[in-house]
Amino acid sequence: MSESTSNQNNVDQNPEKDPSDWVTGDEPMTGPQKSYLETLAREAGEEIEGTPNKAEASELIDKLQSKTGRG
Image (cartoon, rainbow, N blue to C red; front, side):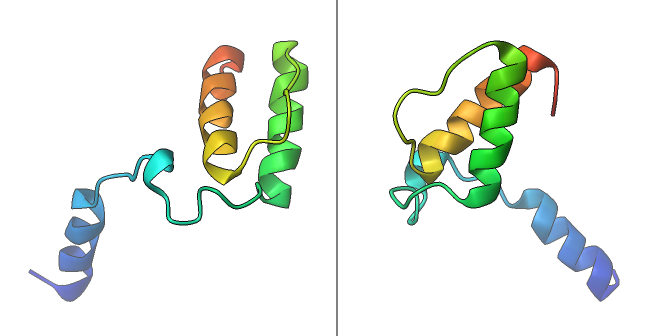
């Protein structure tokens, strides 16, 4: 097995971490998260209450992507 194939297999086997388990999840959401969240909320006809942190913003993005058909 080549090194690049071996590395790809390691990436594929790496499970996605739940946002609530993120070490930086309590930090303020990033600028790109805020912008994308505002776009998705507008498209979904929803308002974002409060100021979500990184983990909360990620979860909201997932929810709104499902609702809007994005992602």
